[in-house]
Image (cartoon, rainbow, N blue to C red; front, top):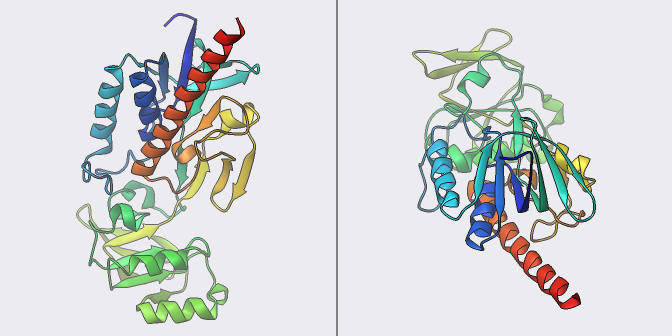
Length: 312
């Protein structure tokens, strides 16, 4: 790559959303670059679920197939990190960690988010295995096992109730939640669903033969569990959006850009897709968001070109 290349579209982030946008743009014969730092959110998981025809595929295999597909259509891919971006009202300039600089008429931010896990010893090492966060992602694989849910917010009650769809042996470890914080409705629903409520902080996990076998409380009590749901705190990778002046909306899951139905932010030519645009975008939803943004960008480029030619 030369020091300064100009593209019709630059996609920052090579996950499902970014590659999907690039695939549409490549097939539309648009000069497109994907800048990928190679840090997918779902890297700890051995498999991904819920993606029609790709259910059970490993995330690494999925992304490798995606990169191969977009390359067929002339999309350029570079393993690098976008560290800064500026817009002048017409184009965007993206600065890369390697020292290179690229320009783009449209810029897609698909940098996802990071998961900040609860500070329980041993939890991070088992995340994506028998410590999980999403029943739709992992519930089938851990169905009918003795299950725990680590309470870290008021939404943990909702998570525990959801988990009962996959296991009837569920215990809610209050951990950071006081018993007084449970509403009467919470208690009624938990009791109806058969969820046992366990007060006290969780001090660590019990692992036997590389398998989770228990959850240990601060008083030393061990509850035999083979699965633990632990909701991470979402940290959106929105630095580039902030630098470019996109309007953000604060949510209980972090700050996400204000976008229209296509993914366009409040900055013309600046798009967001995947978990950069919202917390709950699973792989299949992220790919859909990317597809929609790619198609919209192609339309914008087409009509901008026609309008410019008509003025000559």
